[in-house]
Image (cartoon, rainbow, N blue to C red; front, top):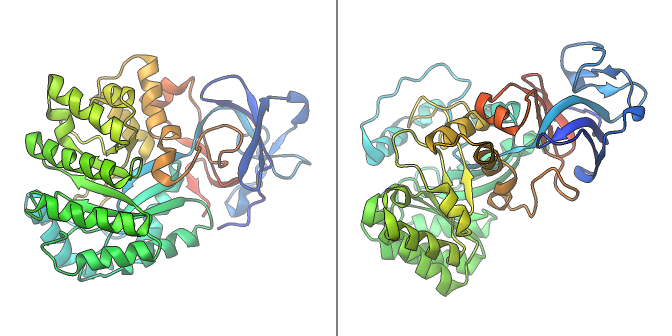
Length: 424
Protein backbone atom coordinates (compact mmCIF):
# COMPACT_ATOMS: atom_id res chain seq x y z
CA UNK A 1 0.00 0.00 0.00
CA UNK A 2 1.18 3.56 -0.62
CA UNK A 3 2.73 5.39 2.32
CA UNK A 4 -0.02 8.00 2.59
CA UNK A 5 -0.41 9.69 5.95
CA UNK A 6 -3.27 8.23 7.97
CA UNK A 7 -6.35 10.43 7.87
CA UNK A 8 -7.09 11.95 11.27
CA UNK A 9 -9.96 14.20 10.17
CA UNK A 10 -12.08 13.94 7.03
CA UNK A 11 -13.61 17.38 7.15
CA UNK A 12 -16.56 19.01 5.46
CA UNK A 13 -18.47 15.99 4.18
CA UNK A 14 -22.20 15.24 4.15
CA UNK A 15 -22.77 11.75 5.63
CA UNK A 16 -25.74 10.19 3.83
CA UNK A 17 -26.46 13.63 2.37
CA UNK A 18 -27.04 15.22 5.77
CA UNK A 19 -25.44 18.24 7.40
CA UNK A 20 -21.82 19.08 6.74
CA UNK A 21 -19.71 17.17 9.23
CA UNK A 22 -16.15 16.33 10.22
CA UNK A 23 -15.25 12.67 10.67
CA UNK A 24 -12.56 12.18 13.29
CA UNK A 25 -10.46 9.04 12.78
CA UNK A 26 -7.87 7.14 14.81
CA UNK A 27 -6.24 3.79 14.09
CA UNK A 28 -8.47 3.28 11.06
CA UNK A 29 -11.70 3.73 13.03
CA UNK A 30 -14.18 6.61 13.11
CA UNK A 31 -14.04 8.05 16.63
CA UNK A 32 -16.52 10.91 16.26
CA UNK A 33 -18.85 12.57 13.75
CA UNK A 34 -19.08 16.26 14.61
CA UNK A 35 -20.70 19.28 12.96
CA UNK A 36 -18.31 20.79 10.43
CA UNK A 37 -16.05 23.46 11.90
CA UNK A 38 -15.10 25.92 9.11
CA UNK A 39 -12.57 27.59 11.40
CA UNK A 40 -10.51 24.41 11.48
CA UNK A 41 -9.93 24.51 7.72
CA UNK A 42 -7.63 26.19 5.29
CA UNK A 43 -6.55 25.90 1.68
CA UNK A 44 -6.50 22.29 0.56
CA UNK A 45 -3.26 20.89 -0.75
CA UNK A 46 -3.26 17.64 -2.72
CA UNK A 47 -0.22 15.74 -1.47
CA UNK A 48 -0.84 13.00 -4.02
CA UNK A 49 0.16 10.09 -1.82
CA UNK A 50 2.49 8.97 -4.59
CA UNK A 51 -0.02 9.89 -7.32
CA UNK A 52 0.63 12.46 -10.07
CA UNK A 53 -0.35 16.04 -9.36
CA UNK A 54 0.79 19.00 -7.35
CA UNK A 55 -0.93 21.61 -5.24
CA UNK A 56 -4.64 22.06 -5.93
CA UNK A 57 -6.16 24.96 -4.00
CA UNK A 58 -9.54 24.08 -2.58
CA UNK A 59 -9.77 20.68 -4.25
CA UNK A 60 -11.68 17.99 -2.35
CA UNK A 61 -9.52 15.12 -1.18
CA UNK A 62 -6.41 17.17 -0.44
CA UNK A 63 -4.79 17.59 2.95
CA UNK A 64 -5.33 20.85 4.75
CA UNK A 65 -2.27 23.13 4.68
CA UNK A 66 -0.30 22.80 7.88
CA UNK A 67 -2.48 20.00 9.25
CA UNK A 68 -1.09 16.56 8.33
CA UNK A 69 -3.78 13.94 8.18
CA UNK A 70 -6.64 16.44 7.80
CA UNK A 71 -8.36 15.87 4.45
CA UNK A 72 -10.85 18.32 2.96
CA UNK A 73 -14.03 16.71 1.62
CA UNK A 74 -15.23 19.89 -0.09
CA UNK A 75 -18.82 19.40 1.03
CA UNK A 76 -19.24 16.21 -1.02
CA UNK A 77 -21.76 13.49 -0.22
CA UNK A 78 -20.28 10.73 1.95
CA UNK A 79 -21.31 7.07 1.89
CA UNK A 80 -19.77 4.15 3.77
CA UNK A 81 -17.34 2.08 1.72
CA UNK A 82 -19.26 -0.22 -0.60
CA UNK A 83 -19.55 -3.90 0.38
CA UNK A 84 -19.41 -6.54 -2.34
CA UNK A 85 -21.30 -9.34 -0.61
CA UNK A 86 -20.97 -11.91 -3.44
CA UNK A 87 -17.80 -11.84 -5.51
CA UNK A 88 -15.46 -14.30 -7.24
CA UNK A 89 -12.19 -12.38 -7.21
CA UNK A 90 -10.12 -15.50 -7.91
CA UNK A 91 -11.73 -16.04 -11.33
CA UNK A 92 -11.30 -12.75 -13.16
CA UNK A 93 -9.06 -12.09 -16.15
CA UNK A 94 -9.28 -8.34 -15.56
CA UNK A 95 -6.26 -6.54 -16.99
CA UNK A 96 -5.45 -9.26 -19.51
CA UNK A 97 -6.09 -9.11 -23.27
CA UNK A 98 -9.68 -9.77 -24.26
CA UNK A 99 -10.79 -13.38 -23.84
CA UNK A 100 -13.62 -14.45 -26.14
CA UNK A 101 -16.31 -16.50 -24.47
CA UNK A 102 -16.62 -20.06 -25.78
CA UNK A 103 -18.55 -22.06 -23.23
CA UNK A 104 -21.79 -23.96 -23.57
CA UNK A 105 -25.03 -22.61 -22.09
CA UNK A 106 -26.07 -23.44 -18.55
CA UNK A 107 -24.27 -23.83 -15.25
CA UNK A 108 -22.64 -27.13 -16.16
CA UNK A 109 -21.45 -25.83 -19.54
CA UNK A 110 -19.83 -22.82 -17.92
CA UNK A 111 -18.17 -24.96 -15.25
CA UNK A 112 -16.65 -27.22 -17.93
CA UNK A 113 -15.45 -24.23 -19.98
CA UNK A 114 -13.80 -22.66 -16.96
CA UNK A 115 -12.07 -25.87 -15.96
CA UNK A 116 -10.71 -26.29 -19.48
CA UNK A 117 -9.21 -22.81 -19.81
CA UNK A 118 -8.40 -21.31 -16.40
CA UNK A 119 -4.81 -22.60 -16.31
CA UNK A 120 -3.87 -20.94 -19.60
CA UNK A 121 -5.01 -17.58 -18.15
CA UNK A 122 -3.12 -18.04 -14.91
CA UNK A 123 -6.31 -18.40 -12.88
CA UNK A 124 -6.15 -18.36 -9.95
CA UNK A 125 -3.23 -15.97 -9.81
CA UNK A 126 -2.14 -13.16 -7.54
CA UNK A 127 -1.66 -10.72 -10.41
CA UNK A 128 -5.16 -11.07 -11.86
CA UNK A 129 -6.78 -11.14 -8.43
CA UNK A 130 -4.87 -8.03 -7.43
CA UNK A 131 -5.94 -6.31 -10.65
CA UNK A 132 -9.65 -6.88 -10.07
CA UNK A 133 -9.41 -5.93 -6.41
CA UNK A 134 -7.66 -2.66 -7.29
CA UNK A 135 -10.40 -1.87 -9.78
CA UNK A 136 -13.01 -2.56 -7.11
CA UNK A 137 -11.23 -0.27 -4.66
CA UNK A 138 -11.02 2.45 -7.32
CA UNK A 139 -14.80 2.50 -7.57
CA UNK A 140 -15.37 2.54 -3.83
CA UNK A 141 -15.52 -1.07 -2.63
CA UNK A 142 -13.67 -1.50 0.65
CA UNK A 143 -15.01 -4.87 1.86
CA UNK A 144 -15.67 -8.13 0.01
CA UNK A 145 -17.10 -11.56 0.65
CA UNK A 146 -15.48 -13.65 -2.06
CA UNK A 147 -16.31 -17.19 -3.06
CA UNK A 148 -13.02 -18.90 -3.93
CA UNK A 149 -12.97 -22.13 -5.90
CA UNK A 150 -11.93 -25.23 -3.97
CA UNK A 151 -11.83 -28.37 -6.10
CA UNK A 152 -9.80 -31.44 -6.93
CA UNK A 153 -7.76 -29.55 -9.54
CA UNK A 154 -6.82 -26.40 -7.66
CA UNK A 155 -7.07 -27.65 -4.08
CA UNK A 156 -6.80 -24.73 -1.64
CA UNK A 157 -4.42 -22.71 -3.82
CA UNK A 158 -7.09 -20.18 -4.78
CA UNK A 159 -7.62 -19.24 -1.14
CA UNK A 160 -3.89 -18.67 -0.70
CA UNK A 161 -3.87 -16.51 -3.84
CA UNK A 162 -6.73 -14.31 -2.65
CA UNK A 163 -5.18 -13.86 0.78
CA UNK A 164 -1.88 -12.85 -0.76
CA UNK A 165 -3.57 -10.32 -3.06
CA UNK A 166 -5.59 -8.83 -0.21
CA UNK A 167 -2.46 -8.56 1.93
CA UNK A 168 -0.63 -6.78 -0.91
CA UNK A 169 -3.25 -4.01 -0.72
CA UNK A 170 -2.27 -3.34 2.87
CA UNK A 171 -5.72 -2.76 4.28
CA UNK A 172 -7.37 -1.11 1.27
CA UNK A 173 -9.92 -3.91 1.19
CA UNK A 174 -11.22 -6.18 3.92
CA UNK A 175 -12.12 -9.68 2.75
CA UNK A 176 -13.91 -12.75 4.01
CA UNK A 177 -13.58 -16.01 2.13
CA UNK A 178 -16.12 -18.66 1.19
CA UNK A 179 -14.51 -21.98 0.26
CA UNK A 180 -16.62 -22.63 -2.81
CA UNK A 181 -17.13 -26.04 -4.51
CA UNK A 182 -17.89 -24.74 -8.02
CA UNK A 183 -17.60 -28.20 -9.56
CA UNK A 184 -19.93 -29.88 -7.08
CA UNK A 185 -19.56 -31.50 -3.67
CA UNK A 186 -20.76 -35.08 -3.44
CA UNK A 187 -20.30 -35.81 -7.13
CA UNK A 188 -16.58 -35.11 -6.69
CA UNK A 189 -15.35 -37.40 -3.90
CA UNK A 190 -12.79 -35.58 -1.77
CA UNK A 191 -14.31 -32.10 -2.09
CA UNK A 192 -16.01 -32.28 1.32
CA UNK A 193 -12.61 -33.02 2.84
CA UNK A 194 -11.13 -30.02 1.03
CA UNK A 195 -13.92 -27.78 2.35
CA UNK A 196 -13.24 -29.05 5.85
CA UNK A 197 -9.53 -28.33 5.44
CA UNK A 198 -10.30 -24.82 4.19
CA UNK A 199 -12.53 -24.15 7.19
CA UNK A 200 -9.88 -25.49 9.55
CA UNK A 201 -7.32 -23.21 7.89
CA UNK A 202 -9.39 -20.08 8.43
CA UNK A 203 -11.94 -19.71 5.64
CA UNK A 204 -14.88 -17.95 7.26
CA UNK A 205 -17.54 -19.86 5.32
CA UNK A 206 -18.04 -23.03 3.32
CA UNK A 207 -20.08 -22.88 0.17
CA UNK A 208 -22.47 -25.10 -1.70
CA UNK A 209 -23.92 -25.22 -5.19
CA UNK A 210 -27.43 -26.27 -6.24
CA UNK A 211 -27.63 -29.34 -3.99
CA UNK A 212 -30.45 -30.80 -6.09
CA UNK A 213 -29.55 -30.04 -9.71
CA UNK A 214 -25.75 -30.34 -9.44
CA UNK A 215 -25.18 -33.04 -6.83
CA UNK A 216 -28.63 -34.62 -7.28
CA UNK A 217 -28.66 -35.15 -3.51
CA UNK A 218 -29.79 -32.04 -1.62
CA UNK A 219 -30.03 -33.83 1.72
CA UNK A 220 -26.54 -35.29 1.38
CA UNK A 221 -24.84 -32.07 0.29
CA UNK A 222 -26.48 -29.94 2.96
CA UNK A 223 -25.83 -32.50 5.70
CA UNK A 224 -22.16 -32.49 4.74
CA UNK A 225 -21.90 -28.69 4.72
CA UNK A 226 -23.72 -28.26 8.01
CA UNK A 227 -21.52 -30.90 9.65
CA UNK A 228 -18.43 -28.89 8.67
CA UNK A 229 -20.00 -25.64 9.85
CA UNK A 230 -20.88 -27.10 13.23
CA UNK A 231 -17.47 -28.72 13.65
CA UNK A 232 -15.42 -25.72 12.56
CA UNK A 233 -17.64 -22.85 13.71
CA UNK A 234 -17.91 -21.30 10.23
CA UNK A 235 -20.78 -19.99 8.13
CA UNK A 236 -22.49 -21.50 5.10
CA UNK A 237 -23.12 -19.70 1.81
CA UNK A 238 -24.95 -21.71 -0.87
CA UNK A 239 -25.36 -20.73 -4.51
CA UNK A 240 -28.94 -21.67 -5.31
CA UNK A 241 -29.99 -21.17 -8.92
CA UNK A 242 -32.77 -23.78 -8.83
CA UNK A 243 -36.07 -22.01 -9.21
CA UNK A 244 -39.69 -22.51 -8.22
CA UNK A 245 -40.68 -25.26 -5.83
CA UNK A 246 -37.38 -27.11 -6.29
CA UNK A 247 -35.49 -24.09 -5.04
CA UNK A 248 -38.00 -23.44 -2.27
CA UNK A 249 -37.67 -27.05 -1.09
CA UNK A 250 -33.91 -26.66 -0.73
CA UNK A 251 -34.32 -23.42 1.20
CA UNK A 252 -36.69 -25.26 3.54
CA UNK A 253 -34.03 -27.92 4.05
CA UNK A 254 -31.58 -25.16 4.99
CA UNK A 255 -34.08 -23.54 7.35
CA UNK A 256 -34.59 -26.83 9.17
CA UNK A 257 -30.86 -27.52 9.50
CA UNK A 258 -30.07 -23.96 10.54
CA UNK A 259 -32.48 -24.11 13.45
CA UNK A 260 -31.48 -27.64 14.52
CA UNK A 261 -27.77 -26.84 14.44
CA UNK A 262 -28.04 -23.45 16.12
CA UNK A 263 -26.47 -21.68 13.13
CA UNK A 264 -28.94 -18.81 13.04
CA UNK A 265 -27.29 -15.78 11.46
CA UNK A 266 -24.57 -17.86 9.79
CA UNK A 267 -26.36 -19.29 6.74
CA UNK A 268 -26.75 -17.41 3.45
CA UNK A 269 -28.68 -18.19 0.28
CA UNK A 270 -26.99 -16.65 -2.75
CA UNK A 271 -29.16 -15.87 -5.77
CA UNK A 272 -32.22 -17.71 -4.44
CA UNK A 273 -34.21 -17.11 -7.62
CA UNK A 274 -37.04 -19.24 -6.24
CA UNK A 275 -37.88 -16.62 -3.61
CA UNK A 276 -38.68 -14.08 -6.33
CA UNK A 277 -40.65 -16.61 -8.36
CA UNK A 278 -43.03 -17.73 -5.64
CA UNK A 279 -46.31 -15.88 -5.25
CA UNK A 280 -48.72 -14.85 -2.54
CA UNK A 281 -48.80 -16.70 0.74
CA UNK A 282 -46.25 -19.28 -0.46
CA UNK A 283 -43.64 -16.56 -0.81
CA UNK A 284 -44.70 -14.81 2.38
CA UNK A 285 -44.51 -18.01 4.43
CA UNK A 286 -41.07 -18.93 3.10
CA UNK A 287 -39.71 -15.43 3.70
CA UNK A 288 -41.10 -15.43 7.24
CA UNK A 289 -39.49 -18.81 7.96
CA UNK A 290 -36.14 -17.56 6.63
CA UNK A 291 -36.35 -14.54 8.90
CA UNK A 292 -37.15 -16.66 11.95
CA UNK A 293 -34.15 -18.89 11.18
CA UNK A 294 -31.82 -15.91 10.72
CA UNK A 295 -31.02 -16.88 7.12
CA UNK A 296 -29.68 -14.10 4.89
CA UNK A 297 -29.67 -13.61 1.13
CA UNK A 298 -27.33 -12.11 -1.43
CA UNK A 299 -28.27 -11.02 -4.92
CA UNK A 300 -26.31 -9.91 -7.98
CA UNK A 301 -29.32 -8.03 -9.42
CA UNK A 302 -29.46 -10.26 -12.51
CA UNK A 303 -31.26 -8.98 -15.59
CA UNK A 304 -34.08 -11.29 -16.58
CA UNK A 305 -34.62 -12.97 -13.20
CA UNK A 306 -37.67 -12.32 -11.04
CA UNK A 307 -36.67 -9.53 -8.62
CA UNK A 308 -36.38 -10.50 -4.98
CA UNK A 309 -39.11 -9.02 -2.75
CA UNK A 310 -36.63 -6.72 -1.00
CA UNK A 311 -39.10 -4.91 1.21
CA UNK A 312 -40.74 -8.14 2.35
CA UNK A 313 -37.37 -9.75 3.05
CA UNK A 314 -36.15 -6.80 5.08
CA UNK A 315 -39.44 -6.56 6.98
CA UNK A 316 -39.11 -10.24 7.93
CA UNK A 317 -35.56 -9.69 9.19
CA UNK A 318 -33.85 -11.34 6.23
CA UNK A 319 -30.71 -9.28 5.62
CA UNK A 320 -29.93 -8.81 1.91
CA UNK A 321 -26.50 -8.10 0.43
CA UNK A 322 -25.51 -7.05 -3.08
CA UNK A 323 -22.60 -8.45 -5.04
CA UNK A 324 -21.03 -8.39 -8.47
CA UNK A 325 -20.77 -12.17 -8.94
CA UNK A 326 -18.02 -12.83 -11.51
CA UNK A 327 -16.21 -9.88 -13.05
CA UNK A 328 -14.98 -10.44 -16.62
CA UNK A 329 -14.22 -14.12 -16.27
CA UNK A 330 -14.62 -17.40 -18.11
CA UNK A 331 -18.31 -17.46 -17.23
CA UNK A 332 -19.09 -14.11 -18.81
CA UNK A 333 -17.24 -11.11 -20.28
CA UNK A 334 -19.51 -8.73 -18.37
CA UNK A 335 -18.82 -6.96 -15.08
CA UNK A 336 -16.74 -3.98 -14.03
CA UNK A 337 -16.54 -4.36 -10.27
CA UNK A 338 -18.39 -1.05 -9.82
CA UNK A 339 -20.87 -1.78 -7.05
CA UNK A 340 -22.49 1.65 -7.14
CA UNK A 341 -23.43 1.13 -10.79
CA UNK A 342 -24.80 -2.26 -9.79
CA UNK A 343 -26.82 -0.51 -7.07
CA UNK A 344 -28.45 1.53 -9.82
CA UNK A 345 -29.33 -1.72 -11.58
CA UNK A 346 -30.73 -3.24 -8.37
CA UNK A 347 -32.93 -0.19 -7.83
CA UNK A 348 -34.23 -0.23 -11.41
CA UNK A 349 -34.95 -3.95 -11.44
CA UNK A 350 -36.76 -3.57 -8.11
CA UNK A 351 -38.93 -0.78 -9.48
CA UNK A 352 -37.55 1.72 -6.97
CA UNK A 353 -38.48 5.35 -7.66
CA UNK A 354 -39.20 6.94 -4.29
CA UNK A 355 -36.34 8.54 -2.39
CA UNK A 356 -36.68 6.21 0.58
CA UNK A 357 -36.42 3.17 -1.67
CA UNK A 358 -33.32 4.52 -3.40
CA UNK A 359 -31.73 5.08 0.01
CA UNK A 360 -32.60 1.47 0.87
CA UNK A 361 -30.69 0.33 -2.22
CA UNK A 362 -27.65 2.33 -1.12
CA UNK A 363 -27.83 0.85 2.36
CA UNK A 364 -28.03 -2.69 0.96
CA UNK A 365 -24.79 -2.00 -0.91
CA UNK A 366 -22.99 -0.53 2.10
CA UNK A 367 -24.00 -0.08 5.74
CA UNK A 368 -26.56 -2.87 5.96
CA UNK A 369 -24.06 -5.38 4.53
CA UNK A 370 -21.77 -5.26 7.57
CA UNK A 371 -22.73 -8.78 8.61
CA UNK A 372 -21.66 -10.22 5.25
CA UNK A 373 -18.05 -9.25 5.94
CA UNK A 374 -17.94 -10.04 9.64
CA UNK A 375 -18.33 -6.50 10.94
CA UNK A 376 -20.54 -5.29 13.76
CA UNK A 377 -20.83 -1.90 12.07
CA UNK A 378 -19.99 -0.52 8.64
CA UNK A 379 -21.40 2.96 8.59
CA UNK A 380 -20.48 6.61 9.07
CA UNK A 381 -20.73 6.36 12.84
CA UNK A 382 -18.32 6.30 15.75
CA UNK A 383 -16.83 2.85 16.24
CA UNK A 384 -17.12 1.79 12.60
CA UNK A 385 -14.13 1.22 10.32
CA UNK A 386 -13.09 4.46 8.60
CA UNK A 387 -14.22 3.33 5.14
CA UNK A 388 -15.72 6.27 3.27
CA UNK A 389 -16.62 7.08 -0.32
CA UNK A 390 -17.13 10.69 -1.47
CA UNK A 391 -19.22 11.53 -4.54
CA UNK A 392 -20.44 14.77 -6.07
CA UNK A 393 -24.20 14.27 -5.67
CA UNK A 394 -27.09 16.28 -4.29
CA UNK A 395 -28.30 13.44 -2.10
CA UNK A 396 -28.29 9.66 -1.81
CA UNK A 397 -31.05 9.09 -4.40
CA UNK A 398 -29.07 11.21 -6.87
CA UNK A 399 -25.96 9.14 -6.15
CA UNK A 400 -27.83 5.87 -6.70
CA UNK A 401 -29.45 6.99 -9.95
CA UNK A 402 -26.29 8.50 -11.51
CA UNK A 403 -23.51 6.46 -9.89
CA UNK A 404 -21.13 9.43 -10.24
CA UNK A 405 -17.37 9.13 -10.27
CA UNK A 406 -15.85 8.38 -6.89
CA UNK A 407 -14.00 11.55 -5.91
CA UNK A 408 -12.28 10.00 -2.90
CA UNK A 409 -12.11 6.55 -1.34
CA UNK A 410 -10.86 6.09 2.21
CA UNK A 411 -10.27 2.59 3.59
CA UNK A 412 -9.15 1.82 7.13
CA UNK A 413 -8.40 5.52 7.57
CA UNK A 414 -6.17 5.96 4.50
CA UNK A 415 -6.86 7.51 1.11
CA UNK A 416 -6.75 4.62 -1.37
CA UNK A 417 -8.28 6.22 -4.48
CA UNK A 418 -8.76 9.78 -5.70
CA UNK A 419 -10.61 11.13 -8.74
CA UNK A 420 -10.78 7.78 -10.45
CA UNK A 421 -7.16 6.83 -9.80
CA UNK A 422 -6.41 3.97 -7.46
CA UNK A 423 -3.41 4.59 -5.21
CA UNK A 424 -2.69 1.04 -4.07
